[in-house]
Image 1: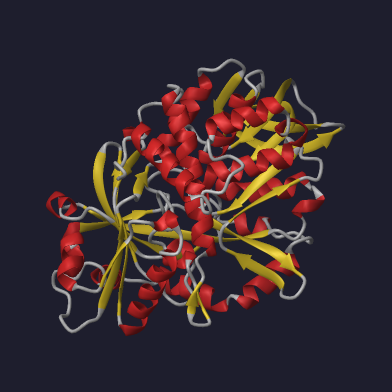
Image 2 (image 1 turned 30 degrees about the vertical axis):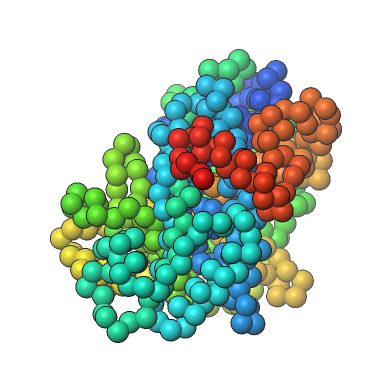
Length: 497
């Protein structure tokens, strides 16, 4: 790999999104002497998956997302919801530590309290939601959740959802006041701003990775500076690929054995964005419903209150779509270029086993404006077309990996793929990624920095940043309440009783 210059660093983070920003901040707190380089091919941070307009879910804590609590053999499995709820508490602890120590800006710039609600209609869905509520009440992490089938009560919670609804239609809702709205674009920029103020941290925008190769005990990563069209090489002991939809192609370029069999299935997205300020004022909740049969988790419909660039917004969606691009700023050839001899079998079998998903995505692409409005009216019956505009959401690349029984499977969620020697790792997948970023990155630190993470200094620092580190919030109710009381105070959220 010929180059004019080689720049030495300890850690290279590819992509300036929430994952790289979180990992960079964690590592810098654990070892302030580390030299960190961050490269981003776009001209700003959090411009792809982490951007508020692109992110399909904000503040995933499993309070309202029904796809995290599947019904199996007549009972509701809440194991994934418990794991995600606990992981979100870990994220809040880390953010509270950073705010408390004035490393990042005031919390109301990136996190605000907002109720999380699930809303369903029809006898079958009402029965499911009732079972879900009863199951969640067995875990203290969901303490305070309210359940109602009373139309007047639900109407008080979310008037837009109930106004104009058929009076003979069975409905049910849950409400969790502990919910939050997190602007991960703002949080990412705050984290990177905090990092850039530290010694031995350099962030380079409009710098794209064009190649990477292992040489002895270091990775040599070829980088194109798009500002002056020159190349240089970054030599790093550890590389993290946190480039959203761009992670898979770079992982495959690394040619590590662990990357074999991995592929990706891209899904595009769109929102309906409310333009009527009076309507926006009347809705104050994140209201999630049940996903359509065959649809991906990122397309679970929600009528969603958010704060973006200091303004309160109301969105509905996302509407999924079929695409061959891995990023909004990507190429239509991304999917085809990602097909390799090592993953073609897994991708073919995953495609064969998920034909209903492909049909669903194609149908979504063909939706007319009236059809989109009809979908919105299931959640807001009195919605008018003139109060909403269509906006492009982000792209997600769902993980495909080889499977002994199925040949290849499509997985919804996030997955860290790392080399056996811990010298390189990549994050693939989507939801609930951003909300559980801290837990994901702590797991990555254990995998890739094993020689350091168990020493007393790192262990003590981890406990300082994450007071529940090494303990189970889902098993210790008193600890969970103590942690939540503190994070709510520092992050200016709900006042717990």
